[in-house]
Image (cartoon, helix red, strand yellow):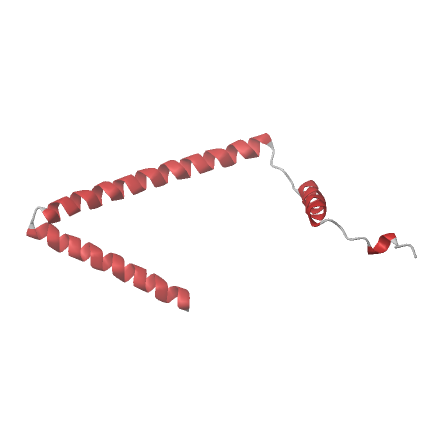
Length: 98
């Protein structure tokens, strides 16, 4: 008895490649102008975040240096900053639960 072609198993790798090609045909690719605009946005946001995080790093490093040096005023400021950060993280965690 001959086997029918309808029961033939499809290779999963071939099926994956075919479905991927079909999906890629449906993609609406951005124009060159849109791509350049999105690239500029990414570069600006990346630069802004780098500056922001650099300022934070410098500030906390400077504050920690003063705390290690034993300056009482900076120890108090460091404690207030730490409590504020812990409180903010706690409140954000509570907001996510609601």
